[in-house]
Image (tube, rainbow over all chains, first blue to last red; front, side, top):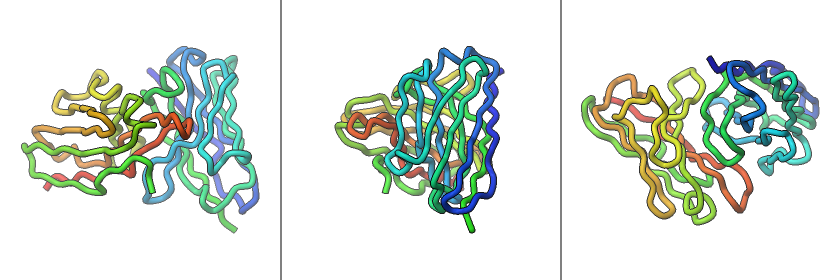
Amino acid sequence: EVQLLESGGGLVQPGGSLRLSCAASGFTFNNYAMTWVRQAPGKGLEWVSSISESGRNSYYTNSVKGRFTISRDNSKNALYLQMNGLKAADTAVYYCAKGPAIASWFDSWGQGTLVTVSS
Amino acid sequence: QSVLSQPPSASETPGQRVSISCSGSNSNIGSNHVHWYQQLPGTAPRVLIYRNNQRPSGVPDRFSGSKSGTSASLAISGLRSEDEADYYCATWDDSLRGVVFGGGTKLTVL
């Protein structure tokens, strides 16, 4: 059974940093692109970042470029999102998701981790 | 303001058919496959339709997808109360070099 388990969310002050993790199991991790999608309270889904199977290629939505870094450790079946310079607008539930390729659909999602940016 | 446009809400009675539209442009829907996600209240999204009209195993055939030009649509027939959810379309955008989502459509089964 595919499982994606996010962790690392919490309350952080504006300008602060957080590192989200996503532990994957039940599938061959290095065969899949991985993605972070967020959802602000009461709002819709917003794509944040994706990384290729090897980790060689990564993509970001404009609002997080230069502040967030996506990475993966295929030896640990883990996906990460380093978030720096956090803003109130980054407050959201962050989901990790897997897909067969970078520009493909997301066939499995985690349950999400809440990030709250507030003073 | 989402890159893909969806109606914010839709409603229909049980047993009936409802269609949800998703409008984009040449750089996204016009060039790439469209996928649909269902998000039940308080849960994570799940894929409902991928590659315009493909259903993952476990998704009832009451759900169907189509695409024409720069628009796509999701149809749900034989509506049931458990279909009440938010529905999102998504695709890759070649100009933005990223995934774009529609704003979501909240479906109410009356």
